[in-house]
Image 1 (spheres, rainbow, N blue to C red):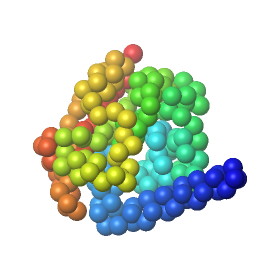
Image 2: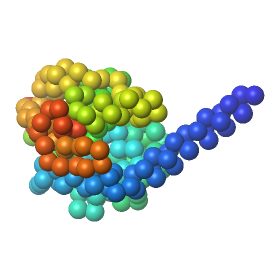
Image 3: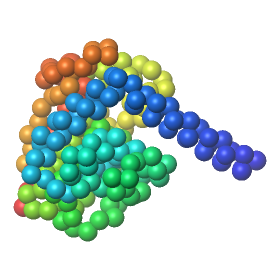
Length: 214
């Protein structure tokens, strides 16, 4: 009976991952990833080593690596990182207990992942620890005020319903304890259309950019 339950859970996880990867191949999500990638690359100009926390199957990270960055992906799901491309170094582990030496990276990024981490304050503190002096932090947060967020949470099977933290002010204040920060709204989404927008009711992401305090 126990073996049967374990097999069922594995099958469900494999199906979920397969469905996720299939959805990522749609034009809509390809456009979203391209817009996010371009944004990240602009911010990371001059950076060499990057840690992406909550990388999943490393779709964005593949693009970073193809643009010459040395990328390490960290994710708690071994199943997810098994789908990552060979160009991206991946490690299974938690953001609350990062398995890296101090001052190992030029930049740390969270691409719509920080809000799903139980102890995001610990993840941010660890990010400062693993960053080199004047290292960069980039945190893309799902914007709960946006039409995109509300549409997603209205669907019971949406991954967005697994989110643990929706108070963006609290997250920003925590990040500001360790980093000098700048913020902006980004990436308007209406239906399947994406466009530039800094309207808090339209932009799907709230972006926090930080430089490590000394």
